[in-house]
Length: 194
Image 1 (cartoon, rainbow, N blue to C red):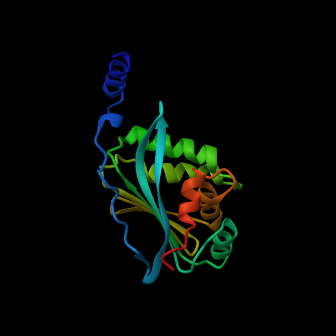
Image 2: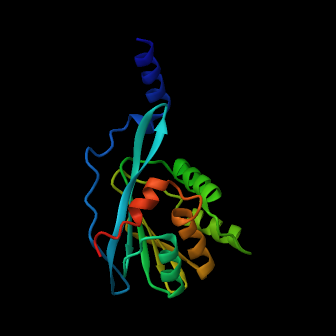
């Protein structure tokens, strides 16, 4: 009927929705190593986008830390002690370069609650480092190590952003008052593998 016709039109106009995502999300490792430090999976969750009543699964996020982090306060305290952390974003579909940049730009604008002098320059560097097409199953990684935010795109080290302010801004996007998604925030702060 009309609904099927509309769906086919949407899938034709927006091929990213037509692509078959992985049938089951990938199993994330329980431990990641950052500069020789083993980090345990603190939590993980799926980021979906609602499109006319359909939940389109986009990526699986994994959050790794040296100690259990169960709240925004725990994350900020761990950050203040320079404990390394890692966030992985494993994509469940191919996303072209323009959509990658657009999605990160919108999410940074909407969800970062910590701003500082020089934020815009650091944000632009972040966007430049993550401005590549992502293949289905590809992973974007952000490591917080000392005063560096290390950017790894699908296994390739793209560069670093120096300064603990950007780290705090990035963490505010996931764990702050305007987090990307409340259910994802809660899942990342699970602490179950520690």
